[in-house]
Image 1 (cartoon, helix red, strand yellow):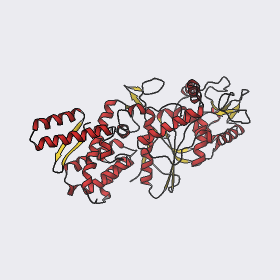
Image 2 (cartoon, helix red, strand yellow):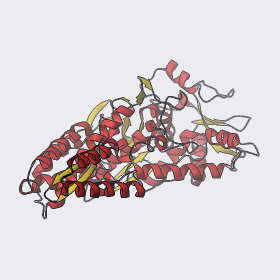
Image 3 (cartoon, helix red, strand yellow):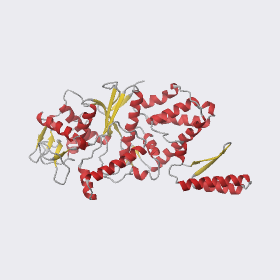
Image 4 (tube, rainbow, N blue to C red):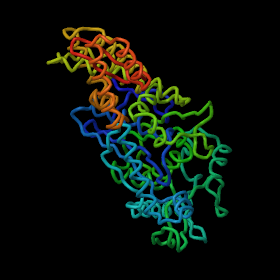
Length: 461
């Protein structure tokens, strides 16, 4: 079956045809490391992790290179470090460590390469130098280098914006030296206190857009398969990447397929740090396991907006608990039948532009079948269920790790002690005491299950 992806460049869902079937290449814009990421920032991490897993599965005999950059030189970073009164490198290192903790907690695989912008300043300077020589960029008397938008053929082809809209977007980058209001900064001067690198235009630092053009080319070449990110990056960031990269290499397209995830909303409004209507992932992890956040993000198609609520995460938590209950039942299956037929429906959904909501509906059916069936009927479905869950980055824990998540050792000891006392009460036929203990555990969010093997417990979500 073909793999199909919606391409922002064509505004159509197209069959994916890689440049080289033996080496699939994908670049995704990563974080600007000045602050904790919010759940809206986490959405592309999960979406493109799933795409990476799908590419690895679909092209199982090929190499897949996934590059996700880190922007560690930016005006926001400079301002934040000044506000906190700490060295910039301290801020970026701490933020990168926090970012990696979050990606691990969300069960995201590590990209093959995670370059920092500051490690590729030389490549950026080389591209800027070439753009100036070709007449696509100019140097101002203040030492700025600006990209000349009117020199770029088909500028605006990704976003489809008209000139007035592009000028409005370009106003984010203020410069009195622009020849055209839509021109954007490739290089800006740095003061003594700001990070800077020597160039023929003077000491300075790169603009945001040139960073991704340089890093993607360095690791993936001047023409590669997939470029991804949030829908908010289409303009101006990705539009400007295309312009400067294709002016640098006019004989080649920059990226063939552009994949963008939709906004996260909060109470019907786009979630953003500037509006202050966001949840940081670290704060959410105090109340929910990362796997539940991941499932909540996958429950809506990646191109659609999500109105994110804690109620929605609670629903994902209960759904995930059912998957883990099915996992627990599979502990008694000695050997699985490896029938690929059981995966076909799941694969069809996932290969159809990452339709994760439909793919999850297959997991729901499989989990219900496993829970309701005896061991003899679980083998084939069990194999498919576990394999499918893995491709969505789910069920990465054992059942015991799942049910004890967030419970301290002292609490676990108390739960076991109460269950022991209840069993003693039942042996003595003191059913009122046994019921009292069950009620106490229920108040603590613990559900008891009595069976032939004894008494087990699970969380109530």
